[in-house]
Image (cartoon, rainbow, N blue to C red; front, side, top):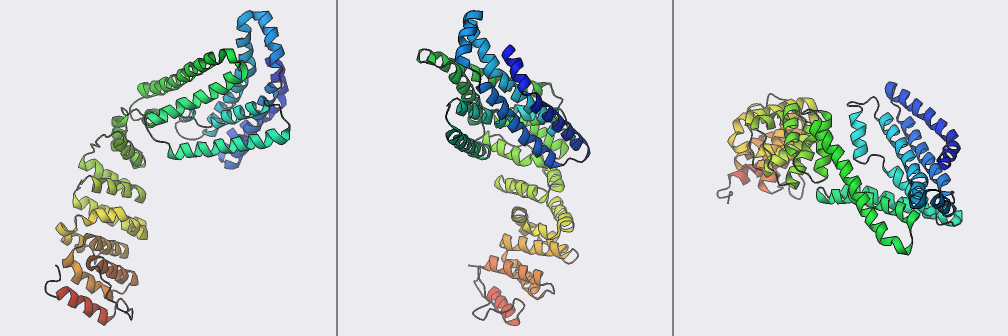
Length: 442
């Protein structure tokens, strides 16, 4: 333990600076939450971690192995492994834990939010970069070799990390990736310290056992949070999402109940994704879908609309129409960007034409343009006269939308080589004749 005391003494100055930065970060998070402070602390933790690894890598392991064997027998090597290899990573990870707790300080659901984030691997790359540094330092080459090599391996790890983060499959492969992460870290630590040709099989077996133990330890903690948290609480839902990503489908019902009760449309995209992944049917009632449509943002309404179209779920039209009117007031021109919502409402158009058009002259210009887009998407031939009448609308946006709707239904642009104005009498006449031509619907 004298080795550990000596190393901790070397770290004292760095530790005091780290404590000062953490105190500043606490004050910042509780008052004005300046992101720059958290970035500074995060960068300093990397420097602190690298300094820890550098100091421990300078220890003469070979000499100490003989000394510890004479003092403790066969167990001495394991004591030395814990002191010189495990303890520095414990110091680093404890620092990561403290930083994570500080990082989320002042946000809702503290301390469960940072604890679950840690279990999900938040900021764990600090440990991996430190491990890369340890392996590089053991090469015992000049800085001209080790520095570029460390930078190269760190960049490669970062690219791999981002690739896995964004594109890794959900389910069993995600659990395998988590297990593999533990296995890689365990392998490099054990291999670097214990390697010789005689015990390579023992090293591999130890790595397999340790990585499996760590995976199930993390899984058990997450399951404990899931099982002992109250229904519809943040820990329950957050742990549900982690378990779903790891390949366990049983939290889906809990997530569905939460979304329906809280109108939590922000979780709907993930819920739909996991339902498809695990081939589970979504069982929201029509009323629950209506509430989600009424309370959702534009992006989320698009997700809902696409799901309803794909699954041929037809909600009461009056609710959908009311949501469109309200959104035209609230969102304005953004309503016209809701392509999936427009496509969904167009499915109702032929059966609810009168209801939709009854509001046309009473509502705002955004509702009018949205309605014209719905008509164009519906392909309703009998609505062409109504659209032709709107080619002469005072608002250019309305006349342009009417023209695009006619073009969508007929598949023709009759402006000709002269590119007639949309409100040109000649263009209007051409479309009227086209509509009236016998047999044109064939």
